Length: 291
Image (cartoon, rainbow, N blue to C red; front, top):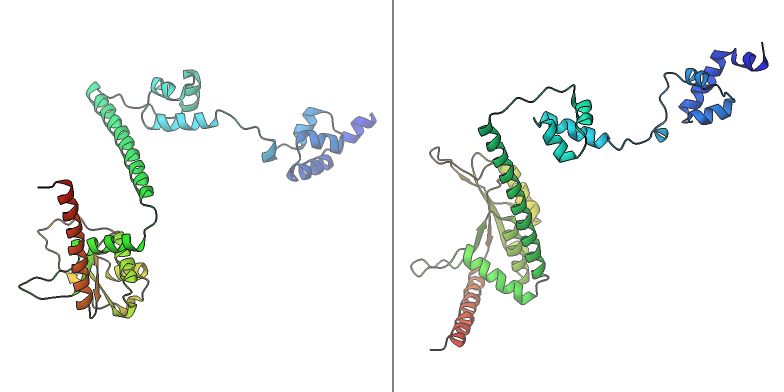
């Protein structure tokens, strides 16, 4: 027996060393050099059953294509359709998806409906992307607001959405009701600009009886930066079973009612500001269209 053969005789001892090195993350070449074993067959036997470390694995460029081909096949695509989308050979596609069930054959009318639906889905996606692009671009046009700009915006907002005095019912109250969180944020910022003290604000939720009342109170309280325990009694709307309501689901939180106490003087100023805006627009109109 030669010294080389004698050294390999202690197979189990060598295997123990090789497995330990493999688990430390060494490659076959590193184990070969460390143990001085230059017989490839013996080297592979020594580490049999031990997975190679991740760093030695070469990425397969076709792994992503294979996964996508299987997804398309499960969607019912034919080899031709998969080839057109992925640009790979039919032989590769066949190899990747041969264990998957064959798609059912559809009649031409069904195929036409599917194609039309996909074209429409694509068109909707394009439209939505354009819609979002327009909104973002428009938002950037606004930039920051000056105090005067906020004063004008808040006045117009209140006159559109707030309670108003009537000649037949003198109610000079500052009362605002809305379900849009953005509108509420602008309105509260406007009140702060007008130096309305927080203790003069009273909050109340108005919501349908089938909704999450406590969750809605917490949501509006967080938005307004107040304690929900300070809210006035919730106004519950009874559900009419004959009415099909659209304002349902987890995003439905009813309306927030904001009342400013001792608001008669403030109301008169708001109405005056609004009349000033209307008068200014009227002056512009007369200047642009002189009689």
